[in-house]
Amino acid sequence: MRILVDADVPAVDLCFRDLGEVVRLPGREITAAALRDIDALVVRSITRVDESLLAEANRLRFVGTCTIGTDHIELGALEERGIAFASAPGCNAEAVVDYVLGSLSTLAERQGWQLRERRVGVVGAGNVGGRLLRRLTAMGIECLACDPPRVEKEGVEGRNLPGFVDLGTLIDDCGVLCLHTPLVREGPHATHHLLGAEAIADLAAGTVLLNAGRGDCVDGAALRQRLAGQGDISAVLDVWEHEPAIDGALRDLAEIATPHIAGHSLDGKRRGTHMIYRALCERLGLPSRVTLDDLLPAPPLLKLALGSGLDAEEALRLCLRAVHDVRRDHDSLLRESRRQGMSRGFDACRAGYPLRREFATLEAVLVEPDEPLASLLAGAGFRVA
Image (cartoon, rainbow, N blue to C red; front, side, top):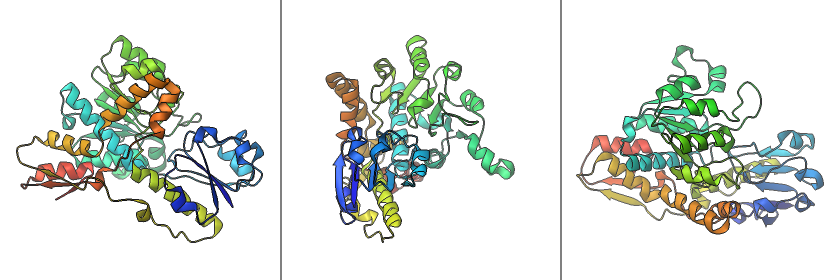
């Protein structure tokens, strides 16, 4: 059996070496010719699996993507050929929530506001958005959510979905908007340019727009025009239209601009690899002998001791940045895109992304008892002692 895997997928040898011959290629170099005599393909979001890619796939029987999203996969083409498919929903959801909290904390510090003073609107309450809502609520932050497909499926009677509103209400009532929707191009719940020119024009002055879902869910040209013209809102962007050839002017106008790395924790990446490994084992009728714990090393920072006298948001910010400082990712994109050009620089940041763990790997030790701070830190995702 021959398994072709994106070269940036981690822990491949540990997972797949006992299943067959492993072939590795950069994701953008996986071509139709490369799929000749390949039995299984494992990709990330930068490889589009469609009719043209599958044209010479004479033996392919399994495709797995180590990602939550599947909009880069032409599922109909796989079904027509009888090719099994698996994705990794939720694999990096915790990492994306870490990114959101770190970004909002950084922006609050820069602009002089308190995170817990803002009402946060979450668009899309799936794997990522649902976790974000739970963490924000646990931190004492008021939230509203917009997810029409969930409301349609589950209803709102009996308070099944408290705090769920339509997009217009969310735009009107929230000072922070966080987008975590999949990309759906057609149908009653299409999300392509969900925040189009009209919605962007309706954002109140001072609004923070954060997109860590899919780049095409926001009209980049309209957002650039609003930022360059009125300049009265702020943008935190991890995903972009036309990646990796993103809009340089929009990059420069964003308060925080990062190269689609919100979910790039070591934990999330290896969790995604492990989920696809298990799916392939199931397809082959084999037991999965490798556990996720086998793939995760001990974190480099185990504990952070916090003394008395720290403001709660300052203490939170110290813990956030001890694990992941989003400013590093922002600076990396600016540096590499200017040095290598936009596309090559964008991809270089992703390919050479440094080690990053998730908040849950850090234990925050409070030297003196402080129940409100303990609750805030635990709500944000840290272990607290």
